[in-house]
Length: 284
Image (cartoon, rainbow, N blue to C red; front, side):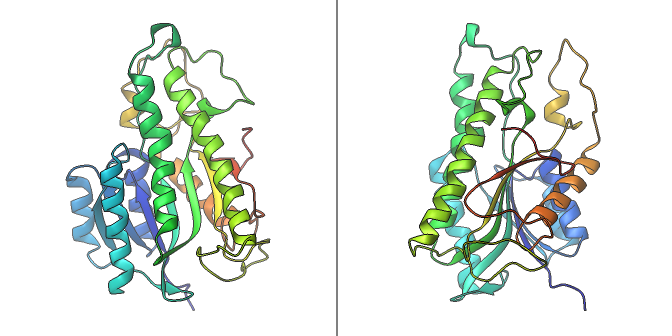
């Protein structure tokens, strides 16, 4: 028998990687909750093609009021039972949340300090982590995978010294990575202390879930992708290994399936993983 459809929540879904995630997940016969800051023609077209499998909600991760309202609206989907399946104590299950919303303004250098640093940190770091915190705190929701789209620009272990003008973006992704690692550790500690509230059940397919109900938390570098955001940046160096967004997203979804909840290479609890789009470990 075919596997039951899963539910994906994709934040930042109006273009590039986020929009392609929506397309590919729907094509796999799963359900999608997609977010937009303002009405998106591309999402509207997809909703018309998949009226029963897709919901569109507004969310601006740089605005705490918007985040709070968004989480309330996601919770409403669990309350009315029309879209989310239920797991454990009648909680609405979202199998995978992908935190993709982000910005890249170039150049943004330390020696030419500007408000761009605060904007990048709010949008790329604090906003996604705040959204994750509020979603996890909702009493009617539970999750299997929390996936944060990061970047090799945020790696401390593989410093890219040629990336002139990427200070704000790199710092924001580096800080996001640190937040992701703390989030994974905090969720494991809360579970041990009896503050679960994050879904129930043991892993399938040989998973290594040490703490019952703790979501898998990971950061993913999607590769060097040809997107509108990347194309808007003029660089003085050649970016090697560029790929189309379709290839990147196929890789990201495969990583989530293999490394995530119930996957054949499922991670242990208490620590986050940082993966490349092709499934290789990326240094923090």
